[in-house]
Amino acid sequence: MIIFKSKIKFKSHLQEVKNQQQSIGFVPTMGALHKGHISLIEKAKTECDVVIASIFVNPTQFNNLSDLDKYPRTFEQDCEILIKAGCDILFAPEISEMYSKEEIELKQQNIEDKSWAKGKTVDFGSLANVMEGLRRPGHFNGVVQIVSKLFRVVEPNRAYFGQKDFQQLMIIKKMAQQLEMPIEIVACPIVRDQNGLAMSSRNKRLSLDEKEKAALISKTLFNIKALQNEKSISELKAIAIQQLKAGDQFEVEYFEISDIETLQPVTSPNSTQQLIVCVALRLGEVRLIDNIILSPIKQAV
Ligand code: PAF
Image (cartoon, rainbow, N blue to C red; front, side, top):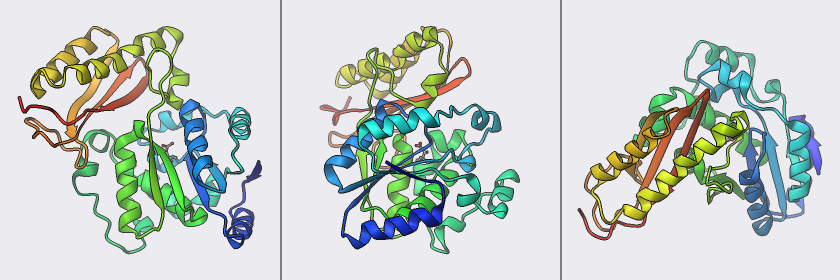
């Protein structure tokens, strides 16, 4: 695996790849890699000639500085994981390679910098105003800021994202579409550990005891999926909240049953509507999110 820290050297190498008409699969990450990331690399390998990963802990998507400080950084281990998974190239820039001083200053002043849209109007509609968008002001702007920059550097044919961050995935799809970037955004299924906990870099901050407790999150989601045709949406929500309350250390931020396209909460779905159940909660100091896609509800209840 070739590792680039410099954008200029990386771009000139990329030019050679492109001159050879090789297709590029891109997996952007913030490091602290786990089996979920490996599944993205593996999927990219089956569909592209060259697989590129990036590791960049993006300061503009954190709305809480202590979260940024505490974000796990495991570069050496990450490199080993990427090599094993068959990644060809790693781009791991310093902050100064990706952001100007002015951009960092805007972030420090909590001003949303929309220059990533390059003058185009990008409208996320209702997608960014619910769930993570509501609770983490500026978060998605920071995500599209860095992902658009990375897309402009790498210009991949396909880019791979995990469905655990489902709202992020939808927003990135919309961004690529509205900026007319010819990149296929590939959604990859959530990878879970043996007890059902969705893989996340944040899990590294959980104690063993907390990890065991966190299994209740996916258990609740699977239970809701099992009951989806027997109960109304409000009953399903009540059951889930009750179940999650049993995990007395959980502080539930939201539990939503939403339309999969608009991510707006649904109260009485029609029989063709595809729904997604999304949850965010705190366990000790760690904020966890998870989701499950429901089959279309058989009978409107
Ligand atoms: O999902 C992540 O790890 C990050 O939000 C991403 C997409 C790499 C942007 O920093």
